[in-house]
Image (cartoon, rainbow, N blue to C red):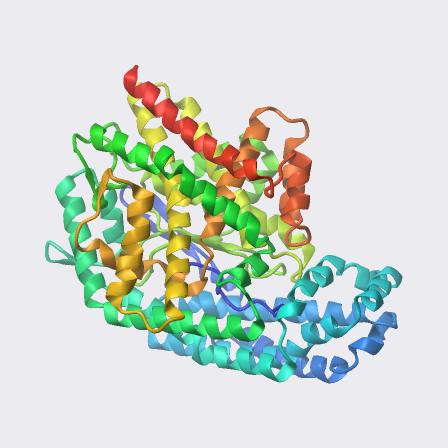
Length: 622
């Protein structure tokens, strides 16, 4: 349902830094690493400006309900201060204000989820925002009860209402799944003690986990990073530590998974969704048939992509089979030198600038105006994200930068999101939010630009092989692995309908999709059955994961159009990003001659990955 945005609900679990002032943390190898300036939102959580906005939002929410509830049908026949256009302006302003408050509370909480004061602050603010949203809940429901012909006439007659036509037309897609007002209010208010509570339990549990590697207690991000170390014994020890700690905490992760799956099933059943993923498809404004076609195309390509590549990698590493912890191991040709932050910044901005100066200028603001948080530190959970906040403010980017080539690609990826969010912000709070399937377009495109720029500079055969291999692995992780994740979620949510699942049952489902997607060149041994526990998307955003594969395959096709020097590509690309949530994916892709509903569309995107594997094989034989 269309409601003011909740804080960070569509973002993988990650954390913000302690404090709001910004600045930098200096690493002896990587150089100064920026810490973002949350004070751009509010100076502090106890600052009078924050308290005043919280009180203002509460007052305006009540006033909005009093003025408009039960009167929208009449307002649809009027213009000016009593018309729907004026109501929409006020609603959008409230959405922006509530979104700003929620973003600040969420980012402050994620600065250290183990800090009880942060947890209380976040919980209290979320409760207040939920109460305010309850007063606004009527608006979308009541709008959708107005006859379509009446609303169409209203938008034709009143320019103020017509401005919001894309949002209103989009809102109508929710009509079949709306409940009556009392039930919608109950669902909204109970979310604080159901899904939101278990999301918070997951975040706080994950932040507290420590993994024992040779007697050193390490957080998740650093331990996972050890799986990319060149020494096999380091990778093996890290994998053993991960499996041990995951196993020791299976009870709580099993409870969270069962509870959230059941919670979703109840909601889907009451709303009348037929398929377990239909609510996600609706939120993404993508047809189930399009997603099914993507998943089927990727699954058919497993042997040509992941199975083939991992067999090649096993040979390069002198192994008959790769252990599951060797999947992302660097090749012997991979340079070991760490990449300083300043070099990473230059690499990404240069690649962006070569494509379009405007793109580099927007990305540069993230560095210059302290919108990025980069250091790895205790209390900062794993992950990376770009959070849009609201159009009246600006996005923030979080990465855990450790100087690996993959970290440079992650920076390029998240800055792509950031550029997209800045450009889409011009649509206003109601229409700036891009469906998740298209939200990955700019991020993956930015990553591809950076990779191609680096590859063109590389003349050494061994370095070129290492770069190509790493890109192939990243694409396999983005496409093959995410579709396997999607299939795992489908199995879990389907099985949960028949009763609560044990940890062993969930582990069996996990191993079934992993074995199928990774192929015979990966040895899946004891311990890996628990690795479903740490994937935050399963908890925060069920069925989100296919958006990564959607975005990667889409960008592969989009990049092929760019490579063919299509005239006016950059302008059309920026128009796509600026559209935000105002257009369907079919309309946005049409200027590029692309159609995601075409069965051959996904094959084109997958063929680019296959082409890189071909190039690797040719390099190996040369």
